[in-house]
Image (cartoon, rainbow, N blue to C red):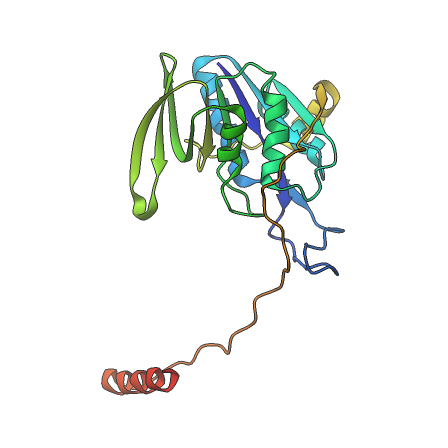
Length: 251
């Protein structure tokens, strides 16, 4: 079984985020980056499937901030191939990113493409859908469980309210992973450094041109701070009266 896992770097949310002078992006000069947590789960699920069924796992990523380190970390965790898609993808829309990735993946043998269901940068959940579109394969997203047998895949898809549905589909296909069956494995820095020395980081030129769809950012800003909370004291009857008076004043 051949599994391909697209990954991306996103700003680490423990950092103090600031809007840049343009008002349309984050000030990224001093930002630290990390692999999107959902992509980390996708990679873990791929490695678990490889351990069960054999085959190979390929991690692939568009060129960007600290992406080499992320790919070497994937290699240290157990990915058999790591591929960087070169080109200028700064600020690329999800449509452009998906097409560039799909153009490379089309030339590779694969049974499954597992990608994170969304990322903290946009949370629109479109990469898996768009990859499936450009690859011409079936797709299921918000996946929390994957089983493969007899050329078919059985997945658990999560809906709102804790409802989970089970689907069976034929391979090849694209899955948007919400959570792996196990916590993503930790890889020590020493093993990442070893991968930097030993792993072969392949580079393939990418092309996401010709995409007219997508969205653009017109403005970013921090939410305005509210007036704070008002604590009500007294008996239950007194509190109810005060609450009713507040509600009436807001109407």
